[in-house]
Amino acid sequence: MEDHPIFNEEHKAIRKSIREFVEKELAPYAEEWEENEEFPSSVFQRMGELGFLGLHMPEEYGGQGGDYVSGIILAEEMMRSNSGGLVMAVGVVTDMVSPLLNKVGSEDIKKRFLAPTLAGEKIGCLGITEPDAGSDVASIRTTAQKDGDNWIINGQKIFITNGNRADYAIIVAREPGSEGPQGVTLFVLETDDPGFSVSRKLDKVGMRSSDTAELAFQDCVVPDANRLGEVGQGFYNIMWELQPERLFGAISSVAGAQRTLDATLLYVKERKQFGRPIFKFQAIRHRLAELATEIEAARQLSYYVASKINMGEFPAKEISMAKLYASRVSFKVADEALQFHGGYGYMMEYPIQRAWRDSRLARIGGGTDEVMLEIISRSL
Image 1 (tube, rainbow, N blue to C red):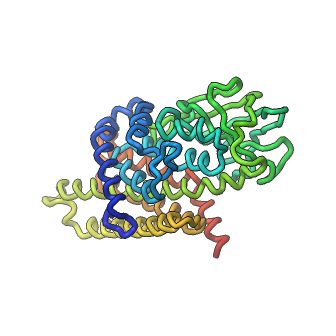
Image 2 (image 1 turned 135 degrees about the vertical axis):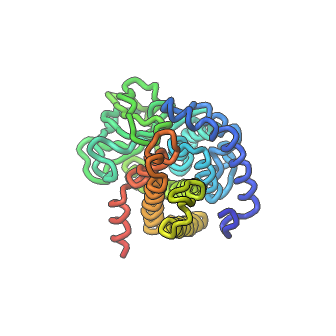
Image 3 (image 1 turned 60 degrees about the horizontal axis):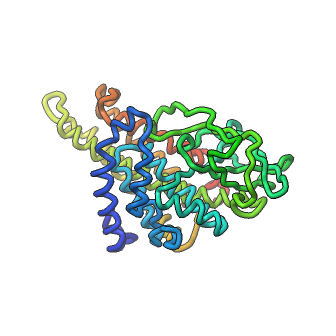
């Protein structure tokens, strides 16, 4: 809803620029990138040139100095690329990696990592999840042992978006012997550091145009200058980082659901059964009306939360509600839309199958439905 009160004239101009870029330079290649199982890294370079990677980042590091709503517009308009994997990969940079670098990074780290990231010259990833620890961040087992002016990192991470192509990774690690949220610290590891390796590129059900990797660290030596934030504060910094990540997921889920619904409306008005378009059947129309209502409810909730973040608040309960509801609605819309397409919807030549596969991840990544429900329930 471009005329929603949270958007001003500057926001509308930003939306126009992003939309033109996405429709001209990204959308035409969605099928090719899906088949290749990777989009080119030049996309980051191009977005950096246009200023789209730092819409709400400080100008002194190459950002545009805009407000948080500017980033919301990017999340919405990028869904016009028809490539959920691309949107996810860009979101990792704009709403996971860069905000952390900006919030807790030293001046040196901001110059070495944040500035080139906003320019599209370096690509970052975020390493939280491990084979035995995902949503439960306090249970991570990757260790960081202090050794003079360095840290020795050992462990592994899994399901890391951009992990195969990244120039650096923000890694969550803990002091050996520490438990729970205590002793957790963040580090910026450069992917050409000795001991850093990509174990394998993972084969996913959806989001196939993005690279997702398993990473390993064996006696990886990291200088203390690459420590991100204070020692022992990593858990709390990651809990902060998860909030904008989750709302990015909610906003992009709503935008994806809307595009899926729009495409389905065109299909049901053209597809004929029993001598008339299937849209003429009341059962179909009413199901579509219900989906449209749920999308609008998810959109308004997400915009409400975005407005609170824009005012400097980080309402964990409402963010969790938006992420939970929007991701569920997105998958429901895709599932219903595939049903409306019948057998054609299950064929790879019809794009609805990709929306169905891609939308399922939103209920897992950034905190599962169950974790969102636990956060919400604790606040009741």
